[in-house]
Amino acid sequence: AKSGGEADRMGAPELELKLSRYNRVYAPGETVAGQALITSNGGMSHNGINIKVEGSVQLQLSANAVGVFEAFSSNIKPIVLLTLNKEVQPAGKLGDGAIAIPFEFVLDPAKLCPSPRGLLDTYHGMYITVQYTLTVEVVRSGMFSGGNLSESTEFIVDVPTKQGVNMMQAASFLLTSETTKKSRGTKDPSQRFTIKGQLNSTNCLVQKPLSGYLVVHDSSVPIKSICLQLIRVETICAVSEGTCKEASEVQSIMIAQGNVMPDVEIPIHVVMPRLFSAPSVNWPGFQLDFEANIVVEFENGFTPVENIPLKIFR
Image (cartoon, rainbow, N blue to C red; front, side):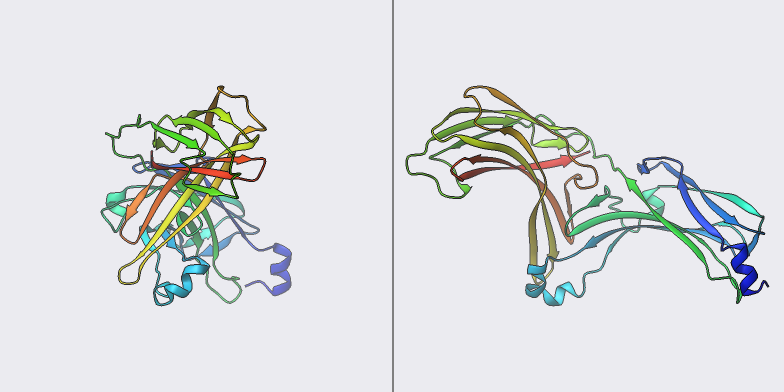
């Protein structure tokens, strides 16, 4: 064994984890491959090099819901989607310098998933998170080993949706001074407006833009802006306590700014952000849905909102 001073001069070994795909995106049935790059001065002994793969759904109640569902909140456990432990190199000794240790595994739901429901898309939400991680660990022993080396990285899973979905489910919308159901601010008693439009489909592919159009036919008060909000609706279900449903904004895209010309068709083209949007899910324990809000803000502060439920697929 080296002394402390000698070990410091030689430097501690380093572990770097690299996947074969720069975007780290994989689909069920594909092979996830990469390298563990171990750098050491003078070589090092080890008791095995292992990989650990985990996929899970993490559920978290909002601050407002914790008090209502206090007993349930303390017992929320992750839902395990995938698990794998595999040795990629038995105990031995690594040579001096940088040594690349290759690894690979097949993302096979039939073999790796404890549930027949399979895998879900990677998703980073406010209260629901679907995440897949790969960890490489170099097992070391001995008084002067400095402990095990470990490095983790997230990889992204895209799960295709079953075929047979009608992707041309158009939805028309109408905002008028007489029919507005949801709004912010105060409408002037004499205020009049008519805004019509359409989303080309409420059944949407997550990798395709949300598209459509709107037309301002008339407005007695100048328009300040028109936006499309993408809303996530995350529901966590407790068997006896009930459900906790939270809606939050994913993104807001301005479609028009300023007082737009009447009877001009304004295109809607909104790209869904990766990781923060995903196919709709309805599983035991939780549910994930999405909605689109057409938000029209007038210069007097009155803001009507038209809500359109969406179904997201891949």
